[in-house]
Length: 454
Image (tube, rainbow, N blue to C red; front, side, top):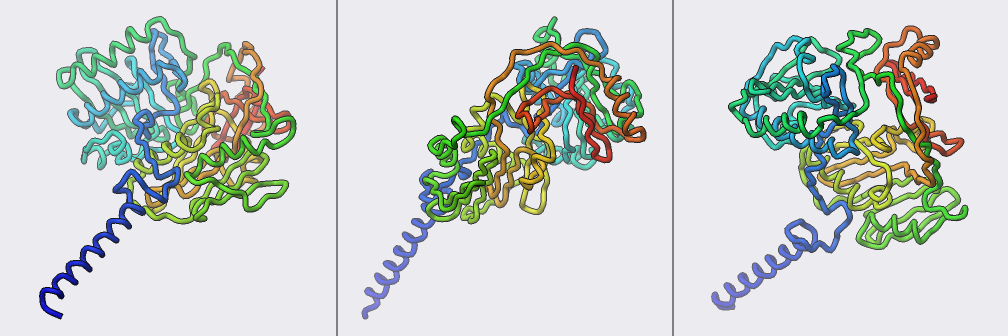
């Protein structure tokens, strides 16, 4: 073979190898919008409406000169208006402001402010990632927190406080002078003064401000008042006239894969589905529980916990059509980080009020919360959800309530318990298949005390 032919052969082999490499990249990697091995979770939508730091509770102190908190529920337009303007001010303050390391607790209730309250603690680095900003001092000096208080300055200084409500003696703040970002400060201040002018929201009081020692942390206690609430009647998901509607169930199931999922096993309790390459395994229990598992992960990515949260939110919105079309909502209740695996736990809400699904309902399904989703190597590997199907919603009735009576009754049964939370929630009654408003008291020892609202 001549030297010229050897060179041609080597060049040809190189081009064939390069072609095979490009084909592999096209089929298996994310360099192309076309991926023959697509599954639902491969489409990641980063929707900044889904901030990780979106609070479960947003309340405004002294909104109408009343020295109480006005709680704005997540399903209200005003929630988003205040939240997004607050986020803009938080970004500005953490990038332009200065750290204040010693803050007297009395300062928190000296003027109007906005409280973000969470069911879980947030590491400072996660907040920085979520806001897409850098601040080395913030990451080093501020401890994990579960409350943020934003006090926009009125031609003075804006202060933003980061608090773990179990320790009000260690409060860190960032301070921004009015002149450093006048437009952003004025935008939020105007929303508080004009956008919410004369609007009435449910009143709550802070156990820390009242200095009540019954509580482990800072609990917002409902003020004695009246409230309108519904009774919700439930039915088994995908059942019609007592029979499982396989067509409707299949529409729901096939949202979890680009391929049609086929039944390969069924019994009186559950149906099991697989897709054509056996990478997606899904079980649907006729009691109304779905468990999704992706066995094989071809497109491994090293992503941050915040990016994992965006992936989880995108998965829920793009795959679980029964969820996204429901009349009830959901919010993040907790999360757990373990190496490259992050699990997010969600709770349900109805009319902006938390739903409480009893442990005795969830435990047999091997879940702690009604929605659990695990992200590993950049993709959803597990998704579990206890489904609710609203059959009928009774017209609202007006109830009057007083938290003092509930605490008195609870402490008769548990006199030495420290209380983590007292709140009004829609409680699922599995016997009557209804959701009704109840008082729920949770103690440090995880004792849960329920009392129907009168």
